[in-house]
Amino acid sequence: MSKLTIAVLFGGMSNEHEVSIISAKNVIAQIPKDFTILPIYITKNGKWFLYDGPLSGLCAFIDGDFERQGTPAVLSADRTHKGFSA
Image 1 (cartoon, rainbow, N blue to C red):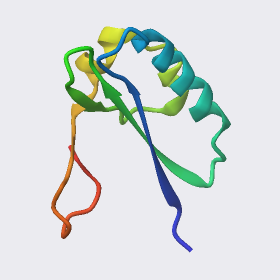
Image 2 (cartoon, helix red, strand yellow):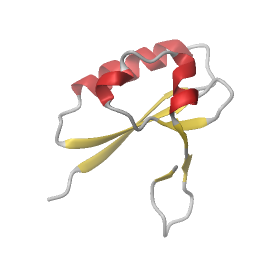
Image 3 (cartoon, helix red, strand yellow):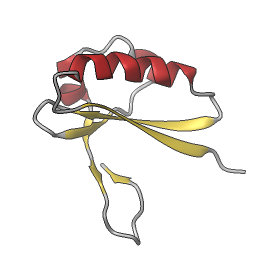
Image 4 (tube, rainbow, N blue to C red):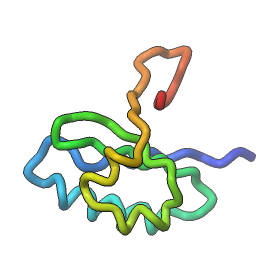
């Protein structure tokens, strides 16, 4: 049986941007290891980035790190290509 994938979107164009980052780190830490996790950071300007490094490193990241070390990502609206494109 293949692993299920969970996308965790966090950050965003909100006054609660920083709180969202902290919440995402806490949520990701509680997801069982038998899931594949796709952490998707949304900048304050609305750009999306896939963090594809080790999840243990996610806790040390601050706001700008996602843009410098993440891969730009979009959610595909094409029904033949489901999921994120990075």
